[in-house]
Length: 382
Ligand code: SF4
Image (spheres, rainbow, N blue to C red):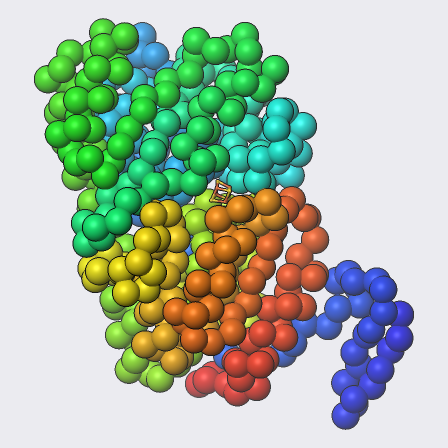
């Protein structure tokens, strides 16, 4: 390590990188918008309090892995599954042990989020000290998503589309093959189609058509309400940013990359807590309100379309600085980043996670990026 003193302040350079040597950049900046990461977590689980002892009374327990679809579709699935009479159990937050276990269990070499999903499924099927094993794990086979303003297809990526098949093929889960609930769904085909698919699939649990339909309608209402609340909070945050002239970091990536605190070393919250950054996750933006074909004529990846729409938003708001959260082995991200650069028209920071436990390298990059945007050099402290 080399210790260098510049204008009385010590800084360290060398091949060691740890909290012992790293001096955090100092800033008096304070965020002017609410903590939207925390708000997202709260809204996602609004009115869900977990299994209540004594209330289940003979209900089958279905586990939802706190991974992948959980981070943007939990209100829908939780409402539906409870509506058809199941008790919903969530696996809980990712931790290092669970992520490592997931990587060991994965048969192929999937991306980090899919490995994490293996760990959550394992936790649900085997149970923990506090929670007995579930009867079923819910792992839907979702092919595409709604995209009201787009004439182009809106597929999920192949790892997402094949998630139940990939997970079930892991040797550890072979004995549990019958414990997966994995309906195939095309959300793009519309509510009537989805209701039909769900009713047909859950007949195996003795669910009547009417019961399934009512649960699905309630699920759509819950999901719409969740998404509308996000967008409304986003509008208010943008209004505050406009009124104060304050800059913000626009977080772009899949929800499971942005919101899994363990998977991303909790960097989004650290941006706010350590550097006073206004953090705006991109699902707080009204992304599906405009056609997107002018951004790319054939962006058939659902997340890709939304990422480009967020890029357009940043290009129209010079005070928005993009941080793109991705992970090693994400095929779609490897090419979408280039399209995003064209749409946004500015360079941005890419943070790639793959199970690292040390945040030092990420924070160094964040500091350099924030500094290059002038966010560390000035203060808005009152
Ligand atoms: S979009 Fe990327 S990170 Fe997400 S499942 Fe597909 S390959 Fe993995």
